[in-house]
Length: 260
Image (cartoon, rainbow, N blue to C red):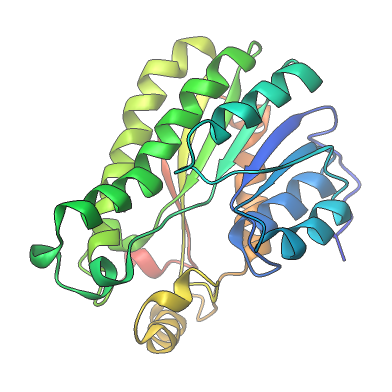
């Protein structure tokens, strides 16, 4: 059930949510929060296999546009933004919540990753966000906000995070450069860094259950973050109240990142 809020602070705003795989996805937490706060949504699904899992969620948030989007498929990203341009004519926010590394690249040492594994990881996990920013820019005529999801493993060596840590470091750097370049147009850019979450994507990380328990014990709050926590924090940064905050990596992790 979508939570309800009296203040519809995003009423009239329109945004694209990329990365919903199921009801445990961070992107789903973002979709729930933005819709509860009044936003109109466009939602994508990866492929035909993912479609049956995503369509009921898209219906739940009354998404006006629902389309396939595999960022590795030529033309699909452009098609999504062309449809948004035709249907809406503008865009206020984009949530990029996708990442991928081939299994061999993720599970092996960084020093052993081959070129194809490296390029695939950076292509999906970082370049796709840069490309989305390029496509969103002309639709954000009144300014807007772009968000991507990162993780603490970008700044510290996290066991088993491996090549994804390298990709997330590149992604966070891209956020800063995009914020500087798009700021004059009123477009803000942020990376959101949640603590460990039991998502389908995270299930591919070896010994992830141990990582969850470590986060619970180490964080000052002694609590694990939820997808709704992430969604509401992201929705705040997309609001005009945060119009002078840009280029940041916001940790939503109960303080995990501040403790040695």
